[in-house]
Length: 428
Image (cartoon, rainbow, N blue to C red; front, side, top):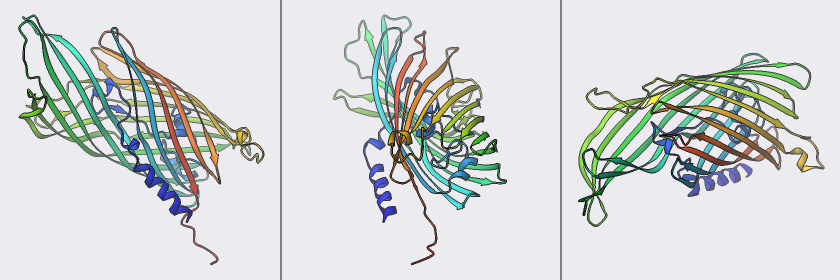
């Protein structure tokens, strides 16, 4: 009966309109396939997205599949994200709020303590932007006002497995299916001398993506004392091309304000976007059921011309420029007294983290970085489940010429449900 109750709760959660909302508004998501999301769950997010070498028996580890072997119980994790963002340049600033689905993942032991599998769904990237730009029309006293807007992104369904080779060493494999749709539209208005009545024109673009992605993980844990562990972890994502089909057409706004479809410029032409190869290492020290300190360092190897490229060389692809990047995270978790039956406050897991990330985009020769301060906690619920909260204040970019500055506050709300499933009854 308890399992049915949990399944009903999850089904109701996924049916909420809020879960389906677009999240992570940013003008920078207009580049490529949008803002890339990491694999962190709410407990990792509160620690600066640290987790490559941070095993947990109570949470699923999405960061390193080799650490799944620590999940001896069946575990559900589900989460949503909300954010408030201020975007500014040298002339103006705007505040926007957004939110949406963050993750749904399920892990279950195949051979307890030896082999655990994990199935999950979460966004791989998100596209959500709307902004305007003004350009001079050469040789005239007319300006072109161009409105840009876009939405969509890439989702991933993944299947991960962790397998323990020895008491101290485990390995993992993740296979992901990536799929999604990115839509964009730009509309041009003319302003200036001699402009009276006009019918704004624009270009609508739609790209469908699908492909597979693979990741590997390894974990080594050394017990120093009965309660102290030193952990090392490493991950490697293969990257490669994600296949796409792109269509483009002209659009004209009629006198009634309705959008009229125009000529088709490109009709489902095939191409690809190149995803980076990623390498990450992590170290952590754990005092069991008390304290954990971890650091992750990741490197993403981008092709300089990773943007969408058509298979037909006569078609112009995206002209974006990329760079290889570093990401560093430092996180702490402390539990005052995990088994204190008299104090609920002491059983809460408190977390704090810092993260620094180089963004891959090169805009007019300029690069940008992303820095965040993170904190959060897990509130224990009856049994061994928990409600998880993570908060982040971050800043990206600068009010420097073609760049914009983003200051944002994110909140991730997650739920962890631990239970023992698939156990044969000994007595009726």
